[in-house]
Length: 286
Ligand code: CAA
Image (cartoon, rainbow, N blue to C red; front, side, top):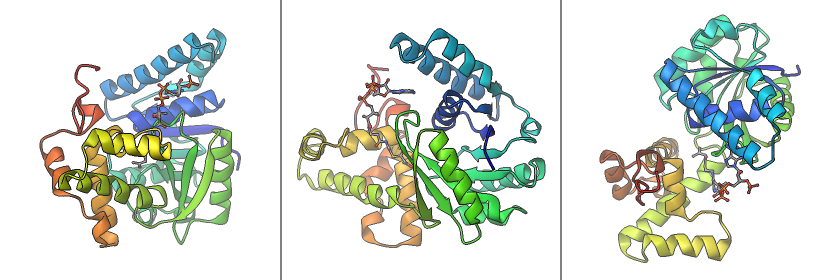
């Protein structure tokens, strides 16, 4: 099945990034969120990015107008009935995701795919509440979506080969390179990335080096675009903690045990860039 019409539920940072990328790739995109203000914020982000790309000469005024025409904001999920695929990008909590999967299973055509962008929750549990288990998979994008080239396709024991092949082709249409992972906590990237971030926090707790020096070491010593503290702030400390907890629960290796400092930062609401303060302070640059 060639995917032409896509529905995205959740207009946050990831959902709006996927919507932007898909509209730029020439697809018809329906985008929704739980309330108009969240949807407006997502649309503002997308229009801002297109304005930036136009200023840089990467998109013409006509291309921006075409992209906007392909993007359909709505609060009514019934409008998704004719979508070829729906991508769930809502809050990283199990119950709301399961409720949405049940709801969308009732709205969508029987041949439509239903995928989740979750970074840590089991895809299998979402598949289990639908009547289309072979058409459910993970499709995990990376932040910032329009820039990051990877997408993880996550298959459960019941995801069909045809679904995986459709998702491979869809990823290519979006300009992404897919990899295939089994439905295990952390998939590939977070299984490797999370212990790295947690180790950096432990090093700092132990006083091995300052945060700034650990960041500089990894940026200049390994050519990573960001050091671990800058990256953790960028990903979100709540997201980092949650991913660590989920992977640790399935795989109780001390490398995944969240350090006390990370928990305390999250308790204090220091969630990284998005809250204005994480390991670093972003309030002035905001
Ligand atoms: N749409 C299109 N292009 C965009 C864009 C958008 N929304 N946002 C940024 N860009 C483009 C810019 O136009 C710029 O393009 P040019 O260089 O061609 O002009 C380019 O992206 C780089 O942007 P900036 O110059 O603003 O910033 P930068 O060079 O410092 O790069 C960065 C920023 C891409 C974020 C880089 O620092 C980076 O790659 N960091 C690591 C990010 C990372 O590892 N993400 C994965 C996190 S893990 C995750 O997401 C998974 C999970 O489950 C937790």
